[in-house]
Length: 309
Ligand code: APR
Image 1 (cartoon, rainbow, N blue to C red):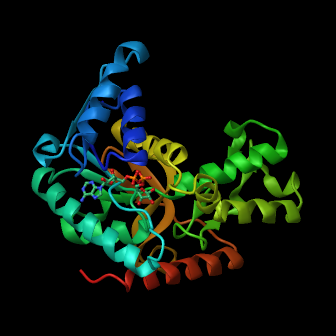
Image 2: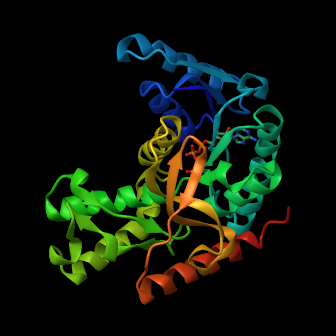
């Protein structure tokens, strides 16, 4: 168990993540920080009042001031705004980059030893902003995307095969967007290659649905984006770190030559433990998967170009 975990952004993803972290008792205290006065305090208190019923002792507290976050071992960054009508993708990147810059300066000041888990979108670029502004090593700035994309892929496969989600092993790599790369060659059902159980046409459809998984939810919700699965993905990554589980999960990591790519954040298989990103695993990819990963990396670089630090 950690002593203190801070979640920045008490919106849908941040508040749901705080509740999940508390219910799993991953830290003694979970601090919710947001710029809106009263919202983190109210949500934190409401969550803490659920503790006697749910049976957890993690104290959830809300604040507007980062002093409450001081000394956190782990910080989850969910601050940002959603794209508004008429706003270009580049405008969104710049607005969220400014928010994440401010947040990163506060993290550097109040939580200099923290591991930072970035969730704000566009994810790969926000990870880079955080790493640049905090100056933290790549071991301590990681992004959540692949676990969510993989969960969607696994859910769709379990549905198509009518089997337990627990028996689907898979990994989605690349950038967090429509260029993501579900690794079909590494997808198994209790060790059985999925290609033996589903024909190519059905698999292709599932891969396509996975790529559009975020947009599918937005189309339903209209005024917001997904948060139940994203907050569950955050919690799985935090648990791997807080409990030093050495789990192998797809995370956005700063690549330095791995998979032939450098100088960007990209979704790759990572080992997560108490030191944060403990290892990037380089696995063999098919020529097609390799080309898709390269294309995904190019898309991340293009979005990065819209931001000047
Ligand atoms: N510091 C702290 N919090 C901030 C700041 C800031 N500078 N700027 C905005 N926020 C807060 C907002 O006040 C809001 O409460 O971030 C929160 C964002 O919450 P929502 O709008 O509900 O968005 P959410 O659905 O939680 O998504 C947050 O995660 O998955 C990504 O794409 C998503 O980038 C988005 C982020």
